Length: 153
Image (cartoon, rainbow, N blue to C red; front, side):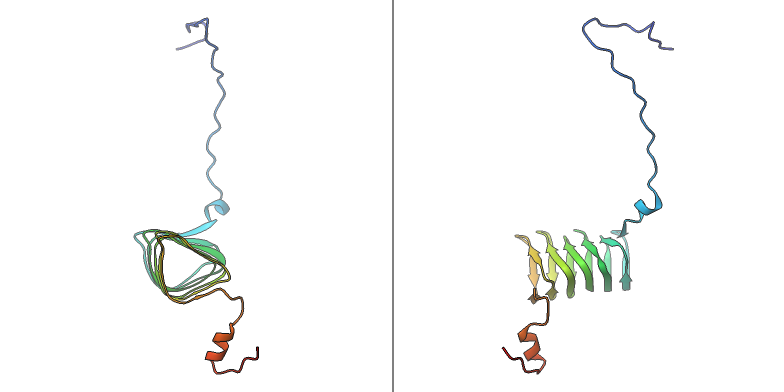
């Protein structure tokens, strides 16, 4: 067994301090549930609803609702759904309309085929968007006229 008495000390070097390392504490239930996640191998069809932030890396068809939370579409995701969220960050492919109450952020690898409605929209160089973009907070004059209502300017 090694002891300080049997150790060979070099005169020019300091002895390293031996401090005990704390054991890793497993995350609490609240820490584990900070974000919902749909993995790459998951195929979901229907209405996906969450009351927490969500990341999707798999395939979803239908509707995605995370109204007061953030949604991240991963680079391998294939989404064919209508999306409603507070913020939406897109790295993968989305076919469907997106409505975000705060912001839509389409990264360079992102592809969107559908209408975007959000007060703030960021589109990175290299991203592909095919659809209508609406950044108004309320119904625009054009939308009102299209519905047959008279708008006074």
